[in-house]
Amino acid sequence: MKLITAVIKPFKLDDVREALSEVGAQGITVTEVKGFGRQKGHTELYRGAEYVVDFLPKIKIEVGVSDDLAERVIESISRAANTGKVGDGKIFCV
Amino acid sequence: MSKILKIVKIGASLALLTPMLALAEEAAKPTLNSGDTAWMLTSTALVLFMTIPGLSLFYAGMVRAKNVLSVMMQCFAITALMTVLWTVFGYSLAFDTTGMTKEAVNLNTFVGSLGKAFFNGVGRDSLTLAIPETVFATFQMTFAIITPALIVGAFAERMKFSALLLFMTLWFTVVYAPVAHMVWSGDGALMWDWGVLDFAGGTVVHINAGIAGLVACLVLGKRKGFPTTAMPPHNLTFTLMGASMLWVGWFGFNAGSAVAADGSAGMAMLVTQIATAMAALSWMFAEWLAHGKPSALGIASGAVAGLVAITPASGTAGPMGALLIGLAAGVICFLASTRLKRALGYDDSLDVFGVHAVGGIVGAILTGLCADISLGGKGLAEGMSVAAQLWVQTKGVLFTIVYSAILSYGLLKLVDMLIGLRVNDEQETEGLDIALHDERGYNL
Image 1 (cartoon, rainbow over the protein chains, first blue to last red):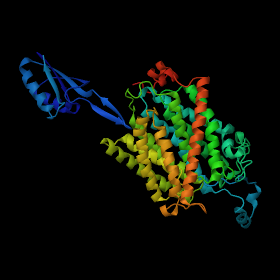
Image 2 (tube, chains in turn purple, green):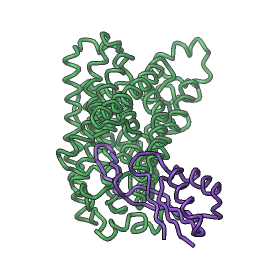
Image 3 (cartoon, chains in turn brown, yellow):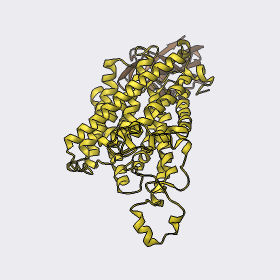
Image 4 (cartoon, rainbow over the protein chains, first blue to last red):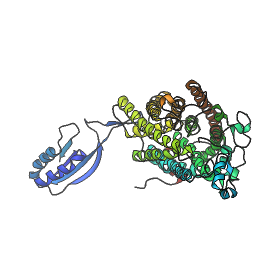
């Protein structure tokens, strides 16, 4: 049994969920999280006052799968969540 | 406020006159015009709508979530308080014309007497121009409500509620009512006799409130953590809705100031729309150029700046003048609320000075220029050159700035001495909603 945790861009959640159903994952847990990586934060500007927002909103998904399925699950998440830009996220497997 | 003539009481006998006689009588004694009255009843509702909910929402969206109720509560309480004060003595101080003769200087040049206190003598049959005096007095009341409410934005998130009530009571009595009197009450009033053009309240409302706001934010001091801590607006959708309501309500403010449903009201409506749209765009493009992106807060602020600036000019400017005033107001108020504010370091929480005082000054001065026929305006008074009118406008602006600044400072110091102006640090950190009202805006 493997626990796969992936942090992805929020708008990719539906794609990832569909991809997981296709490879046969039985269920996932979804959490709204914030963090930063290479994408860093962004700045907001209100009447000339600039605020730096360090942490960006992301979605964390957790999937428990059997060992033989893990590789395909990781691959499908990686494909579905990919945009090719920084900030696509990370996948961990334990 | 084009012309506040004598208020003439019409006895029941007038109704009995034959039409022929009535015609002859009309020149001397105003009669009620139902069209004018209907428009003024509507305008009054529109101007009240500007404060609650318009201005309340505009401000509420810009503060942090922990203070959202405090600013809405302040606007609401000011609405009620000013109504009572206006009834007891305000209308009389502002519009009683006893003892006033053109060019003669006496106490009534600066403030009205108490002859109309408690609306004494204002009955069903009293007329102002061609509308019931009750309607005129209520219309003017809504101006007396929004002016102090505008100041709230300058000291938002840090003033004690009790201090606010006391300060506003004093400010209304000593600053608002006399300035309204000096500009609008007719022959024998200080700025009226100077020939200051202020159709709907550039000096009386906006410069007056904007300067009081600047003085208030300086006397109270910066919010804890300003400018190093982020204090972003908590809900700009409120602000956009509020700005939209202000825009709509302003037709009552400006076109209603004709005190008639006539061509002057029609032109006031048109130039108000044009200047507002132009200023919304000019603030938006100025910000786009300066910071790389156009913002919703920017376009809304620009619209309000345009509304402010066209206010004094709305009775005299034409469409070309409106474009000019809008263009100038959008850019200049943008610079005042961003660059100037940052350079000087004062904490005018919601830019009452940058938008209302600066927009009011831009509008009041340009009113002198745009009234000229060459710019499509109504034309200046006989014997008045553009330069002379510009000087009169400047004199009106300077007088209002000095008067409002000195008295606001004195009143704030007095209130501070009596009950203290500012909440303590703990209350400020907790937020005024919980600290002062035992409530919160959002229980999510």
